[in-house]
Length: 303
Image (tube, rainbow, N blue to C red; front, side, top):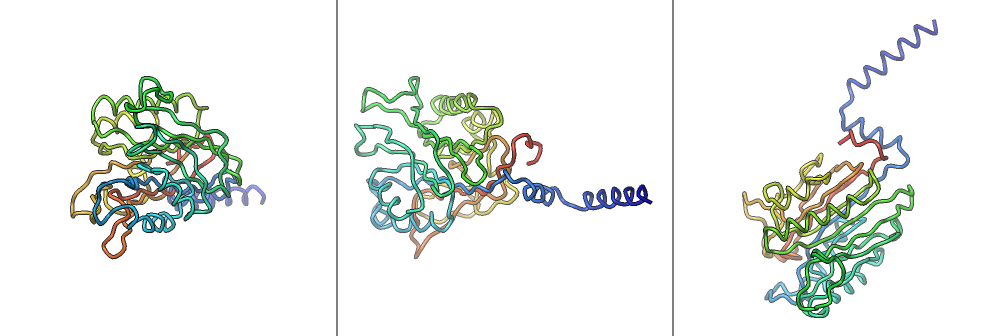
């Protein structure tokens, strides 16, 4: 009798597994894994505060930038083209966040010099260590203030609820496509290669190169990083991120703002965020958001 019941139970379990979709299995596994957690991330080039932008100058759109961030409510936010006054304003508008990062030092930190700060919800994440390296032959802070390369800000976070750790990188590549962008991608990959095996990694930024077609994207994704937009279970919005303060034109594509992931990460949803008020857009870039599931290490077979 016990053998019959056991055989029936095995057959019943097999029937359930065969009738369950891979996504449902992933959700069920996540529910049974007390170290898995969701992580919402966003990358957002907010456009410098000193741009000659007419009606789109920073004072006229700064509240919209804050509103756009609040609407997406990311756990981790990477900004590009952020000047000190912009960071200060957003910090005052987003009290649940703190941030790490430094100015890259162009012109002694004045004018068009920018930071690539990482904002994070401090009630959920604690930075254990963080730093900035320069995308140049010498990754250390430059001695000459007028010739300064782009930067990468990074942080190792401790997730308070699960006690898991993750690494976040935020950058803004040069406009000059070619060898400099390729070396920048290689430098980031080299930094990640030194991390512990199976580390959870998120790399985001304005890469000034089109995803899926540019050589910079191919190099960036050649050593384990995966494009969140490409592997997402669900995508929303156009495959376009640079907009010139206008709505997306029909049929045009070109993703130069990316979220890349490495390690045991599933991308549930990727979104090009289209948020405007009365015809005004928060930036000349659309932000890109991604809903991630960080799984336990050793489960990379699940995508």
